[in-house]
Picture 1: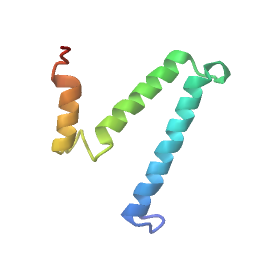
Picture 2: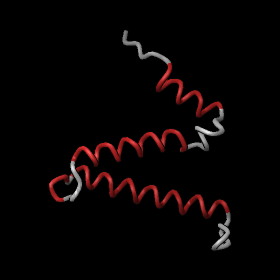
Picture 3: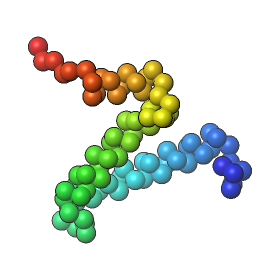
Length: 85
């Protein structure tokens, strides 16, 4: 924002586009694992890390300054047991 003079809304749109592009690339590597220089386990680990990051930061700073939405999402994923009835 400081380098280009972009507004916060413009910067957020740009970052969202970068995230979408990164997801496309990661999914491409996952689907076409024979034509990638990366091991299948490495690709799987990278995608899982991206999933964790998106879950944590999708609606703000879910780690350093979590709001109730982030806390509830993390709690429901990690802390609360999963029950099958």
